[in-house]
View 1 (cartoon, each protein chain N blue to C red):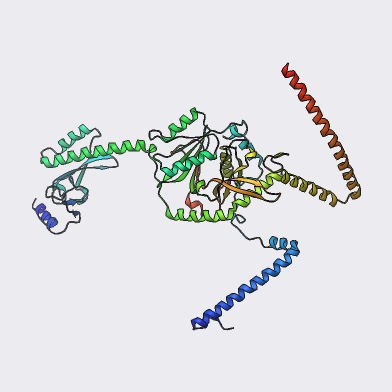
View 2: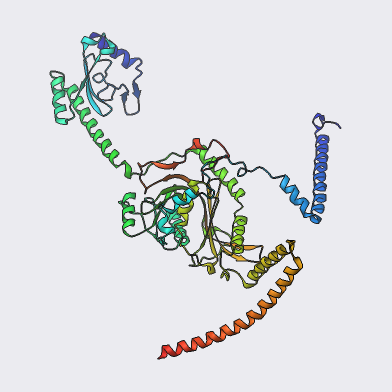
Length: 252
Length: 299
């Protein structure tokens, strides 16, 4: 007990590395401190008989220090595992710290209460963790890099040209059908003519019976013209007659 | 010739440097004009020159990727029986639900309105704080929705888009960037209710195919061509650029485009096989250590 007073005088008046002085008061950063304040009663260094309650990995222990073990620093604290049941743990503290001053017992019980409460809260939060938004850190370097690369990719993409090319390819490959709704007639004719021209050019370039093929084509065209005029008239007339007939049947 | 950097007099040094610079520019100009004259009379020369001097681009020198698909029967068979077969083979019309993260801000609502305009048959639903993702997915399945889009927000701006294809479809999460709403685009056109045409460019790998099909399944099957509206999703170096245009064929060689609707860029962050499950495993997840090479792309 003598040494305790000496230790306290040195710690309090000269230097203690665990002491934190603030405007409101002095705090003790020592992990074994039962109250967290820097007092004669609460200092774990200046009391050879001392007790605290601490938790490690969610398990609560009672740490007890006695003057008998003061000479063995590595075995100074006796670690007693407390019951998971709060009431039983309180009784355990009473039992272990029987005949100790009320101050120590009371502070240990207070710590036990607080620790059990915050552990319960932590467990509840973990269960609801799925429903909370998951926070993802902002990685500045990566964001900067991606922003830069996006700009370059957009330049490389040449979107307008790509879209125009794709649309023209679709038009020319007849993907819109033979009488497309999204083109002006003149433009569509131009394209069809272009195709015919390409076909003719191809056939011209083949070296088999050039003259004959030309004559055949000319004949075909003439024949085609003749046939198409006649058939169109006939079809129109038939359609007209058919429609009139249909009207009559409906009225009946 | 005197080395310019040995002249100590600044004025003289600058003068000589300017002369040297001008001489260089002049010689380049002359070379180019003569080349232009020759090539205007002889287009074959130009083609030859271009064919010989093909520049190396990141796309040309892309790292070999074994997952690039090229007319593969196995891939076609897989795609015939994947989660999108309902859309592609049975002709199911898409019905999309758009919602946001909890507690959104005004810009998110604006973006959501634009999205509702882009995809036909879409419904926007305000996010209620008591419903989690799993509840939303359950409710949407009950009401026969085919897709859910969740707009995620950070610091008052939309920054992410999660696309969940419904009956057990894949879930994809994208980073949203460079959003420009239609009102902020100069000379933008007005949209009509015609069903748009779809253009999907450069979705080459297996992963790209999945994402491409996911996007296709958002739009109705048969576009109304008389509306002349086209929506484009163009993949370049893993960035998917979305654009919407109204087009007009001016002649057989040129198309005029008027931009409608919003522009935005998407970058795939992860893909999950089933519907959204926070603890589930990811089929593909982006990690910064993957992009060690500038020539390596995943889509």
